[in-house]
Image 1 (tube, rainbow, N blue to C red):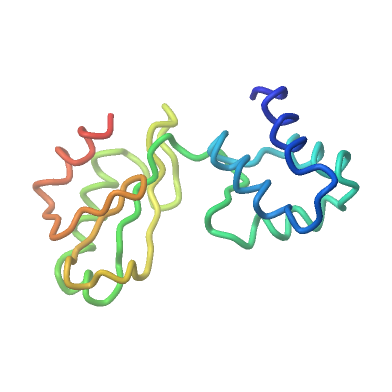
Image 2 (cartoon, rainbow, N blue to C red; image 1 turned 90 degrees about the horizontal axis):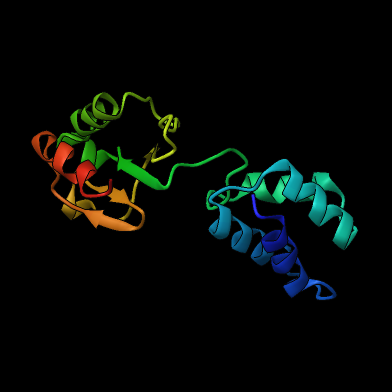
Length: 150
């Protein structure tokens, strides 16, 4: 963790009000998660209780308090995707990566998440990797899809 970079990001917002969420998003973007040490540093520098920072960071899905892989895979298991085979897609991803939903591979390359609806039901089943939407995914395409992100 580059503490100089942490200080730089915090410094951008110091003295401004109502910037905690944006600061946390910037830190999340920079490090792919928000470690305890970073929360402690924000608390010290901005005089905000750690509990308030944790409350915000744990509320938003865009923020993570535990390490996240370089690539975040989201498999939609909403109704439309489910009837089109999303459970088989999820099983194939889990098998290929050797992890379960909510876990990260040991090499920190992939994190797997289940989502209930991505709002693009006509494309189902849908897999999103780092914001890239892949529609009408079949189990046989999963391995190639994952390889394209290695």
